[in-house]
Length: 398
Image 1: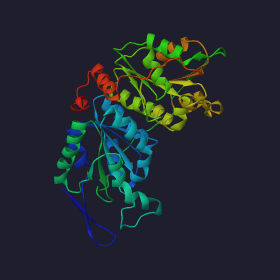
Image 2 (image 1 turned 135 degrees about the vertical axis):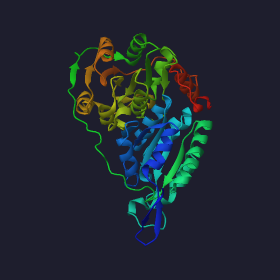
Image 3 (image 1 turned 30 degrees about the horizontal axis):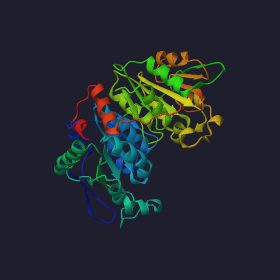
Image 4 (image 1 turned 30 degrees about the vertical axis):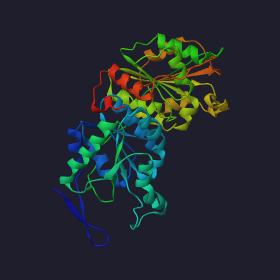
């Protein structure tokens, strides 16, 4: 049944209960939710946290929420990314260079702070005016979040129809007071786990190519997924061997680990290995805490740290001032390794208690004549899904 509440102006505002949207969404397969809190979203977040049949990831950044939801969609799960419209800007990169490019759909629930004609904080004024326009500029169709129970099914079917046929996101814009309060019952409790930390001796730095070649030789297509961050990590992985269990990020810098988290949670039967760069990790370093809190025993994070943005001309990063292993250990990874030389450390990573993190300081330089992947991003995503045995309506979208 639809509830009503009195607004400050004395008018009656209709609203629905959280369960009246979440349960029909769950029936359609939406079982993975990620987001950044907003007061408008509190009932949903509280409801999903308390539902044992749902996964909820509290992301440090709206773009990370989109990437995690996208990883779950790669693994065959319908997924939702929730955010306040003020954080929509943080999600532009993955929405335009991950979801759009790879044709991977997620359902967005975006709250409308700063709604024109409604009093709100000054920082929301402009975004309230341009939220719909921004979605349309990103070619994301949208509809109003339903405030009557009888409209929920239509809203969800419209979203699903678009997502399944195009492989691209759909958004619901939520106004204030559209969902009745729902109290948080319990919730996640994150205790810092014990962490084993091991370091290697100094020596000649390995090349990125040597590390990746050893990684490919030591993993099987049948039980692992390799996700390489944008730039030379992906290009060199492709040049070594192009396998159906590889995914080469072509954009959404910094989102590889969040994508891997979503996929690892969706597919606990596979080892998910994220190959990252120091510039990419620095861009979204808050995501390390999310990995430490939510990643399971099949998540492995390999950081190749050469101290520069090599694919853009070799400009230095601030990585030399950052103790990445110490950060990873503080963020809750179960095993943390640090090395400069010796490919045996890659083997140690894959045998360590996960979630596991390995930072290898690599030499600068790129193999001569390094090719770009000739396989197109949608094909990369579809063949990975096929390799995982995933069949979804959107897996045929091109």
